[in-house]
Image (tube, rainbow over all chains, first blue to last red; front, side, top):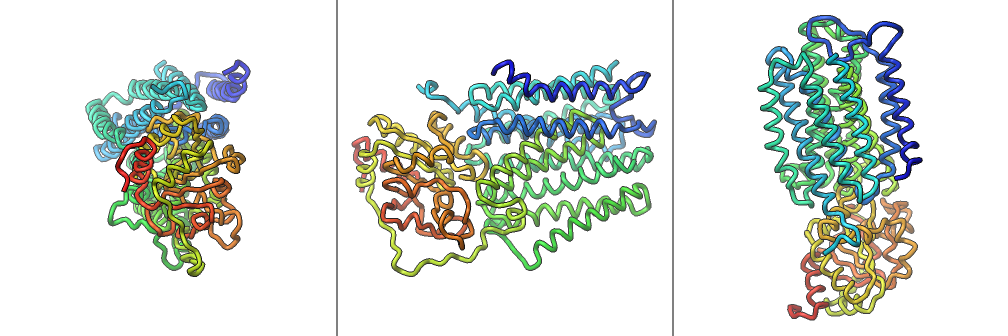
Length: 140
Length: 470
């Protein structure tokens, strides 16, 4: 891919990161805690606007990138995005690993298992399918 | 400090996810996309695991991850014809994970830090559990239908006031949700929360039962989008931008695929979800004067041998019969004779987006010979033989000509414009949508009845000069 191409689709990402950084800095003082507060302690003020902002930009980046995916690869694309959306694993780990009541952790562990299954099977099957796509020169 | 590290890792993971999807735009770089995705995931998991509040129950995490590997590995080894089911199943796992985390967070905060249950968070949690749980049961149903599990009806199930009931359920869930946003910690709140879960689970089932097999590519794409959006909602609940970006990437991917699928069928989202495609009037079978002309294997082989351009149009029937390897042998035989062979790929052929491409790639057919419908259609008049293997609605000329046909307006592969059409078909029954196909009655069309794998196998034997014909 050419440099211009890279620049074209990197631009929104850079904007997103810059905007996120600007938001995180806030007016004076250290950046606010952006992870989940431990149960039963303080209530972190949620930064809704930057989250909506990130969501909007990520959706546009997603649409831009995925529109260019070759139709040949739509099945592997779906299994890859499947594995990517198993990023829910992050939330599951936080719920499972923290010092929460037992029933909460059980829910978290099931969620963690489900996401992990998607990660493992999603990436493996995507790779397995992609290995099969060969150009003209690739055949024995 | 540790927080800065976590956030930095999340930024890196996000960039890698975007790169991974970017690499998918070309088969040559696509595998790099998988490595990028794996790297991003590992970074994200380790960064999360290293957070100070996640230090208590490592054993649980390790066990759940190990179990994920144990179940995930065999799920990645399924035959490629079962990929649609596997994909639907993984959407349901994704929905389940989001739904459970949402539930856990709600009850956690309800039992302790109630001040965390702000209206914004509650809205996000409600969205998360509704999307998550409806994706869970909906995708399970879709997977069951695709796997042809006996107690899940294959044909669309409809009942009076179906759409009213479905919309009513969703509305009820939304009203309960609104009440919860305003009163997250009232005496009845937990009950209302669980009722919403119940409604979402039920809605998922009801959403899928009226949907027929031909609509599966669209439905799978929509469920893909929902699974992504439920991860986004989780990101809003947990204030986690990595979840939001990765979920949004998945959501937009599902959205784009759904749009492509809908366009390829000339239908709207609403029409797919609420239209109950398969129960259309059982076609006007045009009296008795319509008759199929059948061709022998020898005749068909001769037709193929004399061609200079052969276009093969694969459909779901090829997947069912597992005929892709025989098709590849046929491809080799024809290539050996200097005949140009192309595959015409309709976007909704099969049961999920790109289904045919994967099957043919598995059979070692170079992707350069897999041609999209729009690109091959202008060449169809020059095509000597169009060989239709288990495709039906995607080559039905009624889509162009017959305004009363339920598939009218759907773009099709113009197989009927080829000089000769050979159609391999399992039985004389109409296709999935229950619509008669004029193509089979055209005077240029010759039918080869039988299992696709067997028929193509016979053709290969005939062409390779071996014995084994009837």
